[in-house]
Image (cartoon, rainbow over all chains, first blue to last red; front, side, top):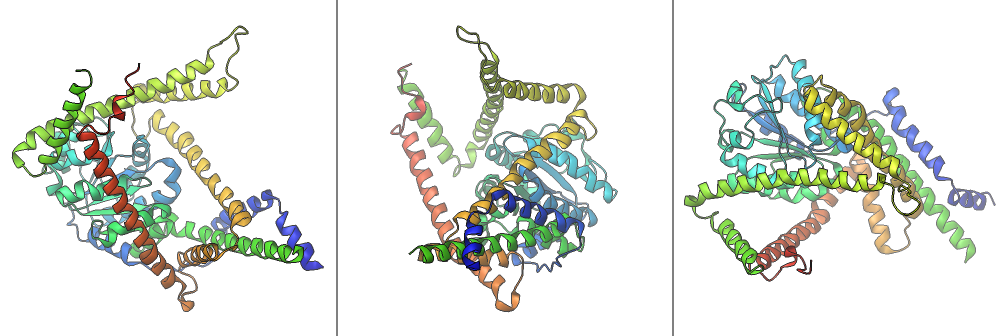
Length: 280
Length: 210
């Protein structure tokens, strides 16, 4: 009797109750230090870390491509922050660009890059530069293989590229130790397929969790040398560099929400089969 | 001639782009073609802006005998005002970190888009609760895989080997199917490109009736 009442109640559960549960599960872990999170660094993230870690300080720059829009910022910005912290803490120079089709990645880079550089006292155009946005990602990637100066004649702040000291010796991909693309679209894949194959550059990718499954074949084939997948990838990188940030904080919410969804799926199945059996 | 000339252009461009990959002497010409493509791409942004303005101005205009506007015209007004506002802010105040353009981006566009995307989680949770049923063997396998990957991504239940199983699902069955899709898409792209270059596929030229 109770089970029957419960099963019918679950099946008729108002979606607003589910929404309320979800809202609480997402927000509360940010305010209470619970649940405990233990992150194990995966091979994909370790590989990405090793590639960046081996770039000589104050030498040729690591290219960081902000290929995502604000919709994915909650998941991908923690990755950008973690990688920038790693690079700047080691004195690795960063040359940022954005090839996200609508150009909104440039807005994110403008906010993130100077903020993290300032944490480590890194100077614009000496330790980091932001060259801005180019439409048509594949063509821009291929053009950079011939001449970065031609692809980006001025930086995002209209400074001619010849006047940027850290790029004096940078002509094309031959002087670029690695490209780290942070992408929510196929742009991440394009880096591996087009300039990766033609110019043999080292490609690392930070991707949304949904998109990571699509890119996995390129990691296995060696076309992408390391992957940071979703918020977990960001959390792993933060754990690896020993600087907890939004990735690890967000993992608490993610953990609670995952279990909440699993509980709701189990409850839904129980109610469904119980009522089916009773009806038949 | 109206049909043959574009087809010939396409054939020459297609053959050139294929051959240049193997002939280093073609590099300067390849670079020139890349410049052309980048310029054309820049114009596509102009075209996009013009298209958005045209569509929304059309909605705002009074039409018909009763001179009525489209019922959604206030949204169109907001869209055009937002676009022009951002453009003016960028052109006049620049795009630096402290500029109005960047402040508008940080304070409005970023949270609004993030909110829109976050709403997906609510629909996803509700949909999973209502429709994720183990009605068949296929559905049971799918559901089990989903639950294992969800727990595995949290590095939980390591004693039961759940993270290892989750990793195997992603690296095994998922990888195999994704690779098959990638190869299929690649072959499809190559064959379509070949058909376009050889003039078999002509839909990009339009119907020719206009």
